Image (spheres, rainbow, N blue to C red):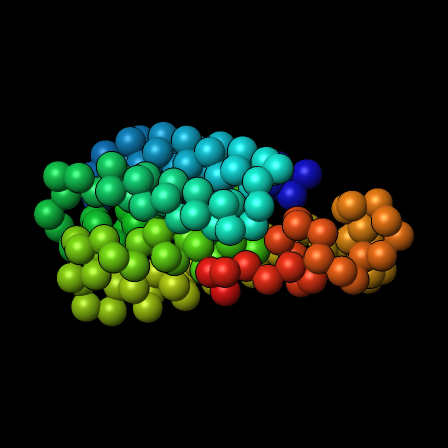
Length: 170
């Protein structure tokens, strides 16, 4: 459910003419990459993998998507815009994996060579995750139960990457 809400958020925010492209960069390619990344990350976070494996796979998926999308780009603005779009889509789909998403881009040389880019991207990731998290919070203010393992105790680690589980990337 959360991934669907987040994907819808992404679709409305980034699809179509809401995000004007630069004169050199093909926005359709970036949007296609973002859709593929969203699907891949959704699959990862809803799998039965351990948290460490999910973190590693989310990070690797972001790294691969960004590297593919910026391959051949030389304009720093296009590199930054493309990276920011992909990472914010990832954060909207997986708001609890912001650390893994950031780790996916922090060593990509074309991105890190742009002054201030990593800070700007990290801020965008956190903002996108916060927006996605706000949208999936119960409207009535009732505390959402988190007893995913069905044992009647939602305060102990149950492997669903939330406040009672600590991710290695955080």
